[in-house]
Image (cartoon, rainbow, N blue to C red):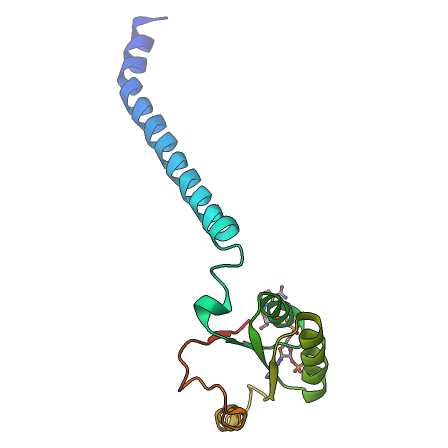
Length: 147
Ligand SMILES: NC(=O)c1ccc[n+]([C@@H]2O[C@H](COP(=O)([O-])OP(=O)(O)OC[C@H]3O[C@@H](n4cnc5c(N)ncnc54)[C@H](OP(=O)(O)O)[C@@H]3O)[C@@H](O)[C@H]2O)c1
């Protein structure tokens, strides 16, 4: 190699070394983070992080009669949560409520409200008051899933 080429190589050797070292370090940190995240979700979180014992008896799911909301309601019921199902159509809520309670043996409550209306919160509050055994105000350990 010509002496000019050697000079250039020597000049870039140290920067290239540090670029490679930093890239390798960054990829290692990312891999460890992904591994820890996987362990948290798939090992530690395997039914134990999201459970009624940790989060409270009731899970409230909006949009619960179709798609993502319904899937969450089913999975949360499978994990033992009692489910409050909220969406617009009472007939669909009744169907999903029956399906979930017969499949998973958990309590369910339904609230039919249209979130595009402005006066829904009094209806939700009224419905939760009537049920008597739970309310956001009184029992802090409930959680809400909004797809
Ligand atoms: N599917 C996807 O890949 C995807 C991806 C990213 C984000 N999202 C978003 O996630 C949400 C759910 O998606 P999805 O695919 O599961 O929808 P979906 O299958 O259409 O289900 C919608 C649910 O929301 C209820 N709902 C709709 N409008 C409502 C309203 N005004 N008030 C109260 N309840 C109402 C429906 O109940 P009724 O039928 O009884 O009204 C139904 O239970 C949407 O906002 C969507 O934009 C979806």
